[in-house]
Amino acid sequence: MSGKVYLGVDLGGTTIKLGLCDEQGNLLQTYEGPTGTEHGADVVLENIAQYARKLVEESAYTWEQVAGIGAGFAGFMDMEEGVMKLAPNLGWRDVPVRRILEEKLGKPVKINNDANVAALGEAWAGAGKGINNLVCYTLGTGVGGGVIIRGHIYEGFNGMAGELGHMVIVPDLEAIDCGCGKKGCLETVSSATGIIRMAKEAVARGEHTSLALVENIMAKDVFDAAKTGDETALRIINRAALYIGKSMALISVVLNPQRFIVGGGVSKAGDILFDAIRKYYIEHAQETVKEGVDIVPAILGNDAGIVGAAGLSLRA
Amino acid sequence: MSGKVYLGVDLGGTTIKLGLCDEQGNLLQTYEGPTGTEHGADVVLENIAQYARKLVEESAYTWEQVAGIGAGFAGFMDMEEGVMKLAPNLGWRDVPVRRILEEKLGKPVKINNDANVAALGEAWAGAGKGINNLVCYTLGTGVGGGVIIRGHIYEGFNGMAGELGHMVIVPDLEAIDCGCGKKGCLETVSSATGIIRMAKEAVARGEHTSLALVENIMAKDVFDAAKTGDETALRIINRAALYIGKSMALISVVLNPQRFIVGGGVSKAGDILFDAIRKYYIEHAQETVKEGVDIVPAILGNDAGIVGAAGLSLRA
Image (cartoon, rainbow over all chains, first blue to last red):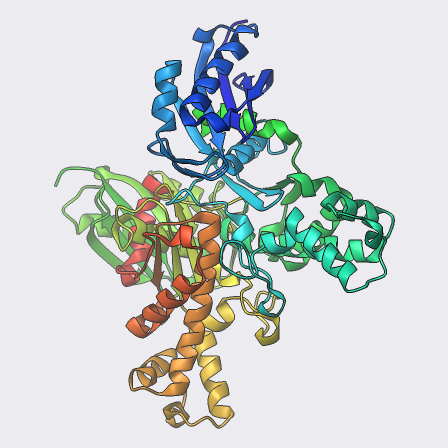
């Protein structure tokens, strides 16, 4: 096959996923292997290099066609310098990832954080295709986010743009402590963790809910209960949606994006969640900023990380 | 004199101000004349054209050296098309400003709204010189704003980015109606209008304050009273500062700008206001986003509009 291709690496604590994309962001080939976190940074980076070569070998493309390589990580990094400052899930501190990978691979490498990379994946080839200005939410264990401006990831001064989970949005009287040290962050109510906490509290309060019969409540149990009309579950999802909608209304007067994309495990709740988010967004957003703006689910799922990483060379 | 120059127009309801800048944003020459609002859009646009020619004639530069012309207006506009959709202070609706000015002047023209233009002026040649990512607040009758990303104005999908005055930030229990139709907007507490309202309410409540002796309270009276230690005045300025600081903390996790610039009449309150804004920002902002971020007063004053308008050709 002819043409340039772009290689993306999604580095997780247990698995490294890799993908090859064309210039439009279409995912052509994938590969995955164990991270080997326990062997330290040198081995992990060597694994990335080996898997990358294998990915390309098994594809219809040659190594020469690889025009750029990108990698997404969880943690704090200096993106300009390509240094991983702190990656708690890998146990890394000050690892010059970009330089090491460029030496091993002989290609230009870009790194970025996983939330930004997932946002870029959706923007480039997913639910945001063709939209230049958008904001992505990832509702998982925490709430992450990414800001795409003129088609490119916007990182901000310290690389902290898009930390949407730490918007302080819950009123003081209802706010609880967030892991970040503040109170009332979006993440405390709209993450899977927040939803599970609210469910457990409702059960502990003795609310009449089918969730009382579930041994170890997961976010999915709350969605399932909501779909059967369980009022406690509906109220919890509604509350998660309220603060997402309110946070979007705030973002709209600052950034006025054309589209909000919502992904991550919690987004699997589907219409119950999205209908409520849209209702609260419309209720709280300024008239002038909401015209033509939509709120849609992410569509790339777990592939967003490798597609976005592949896109870093073109649109970081 | 050699080199390219840029011409900026700040169109107000009573006066048109014009300025000529070099490529670094230094203001070389100014001119101003009456707007002639009462004679309608045709006359106003012809006035702009005549004043622009006179400005250049009186300068050390030639018309040929003018590389671009920009104009800032108050109102809603379609920036892509260069059409003023609605300018309440001029009584205009759907005026194709850019086309008309380009015909009259024979040069490329860009238009933008006054808050964005003032932000660009400060970013290009004022308190944000050399800083690529910043957010400007203009605290006047209302609260306006502008977002500068990578040195350029960021307008958003509907041209509504930077409408910072309409961030809903005051808790429900204390929120009052905003002119925009929502409740609890930043503008209700942190604009001159908001400060005057709080002062009048305090006097009406019978608070022991020197403001009770002022016949028609203006924002400046509140600043002056605060400087003499008047507790009511200090509390009002503190409240205005609290919500500005909180709004900056929210913006920081979304955009992570390097600098906040605060201008407009209310910013004349000086250190009393800025010290409080900085205190509340530090108190409310995430640890990771506030490192190295500063909050500074605007420095161009009334010239920000003409300098920013001149910069539109280079950095819109």
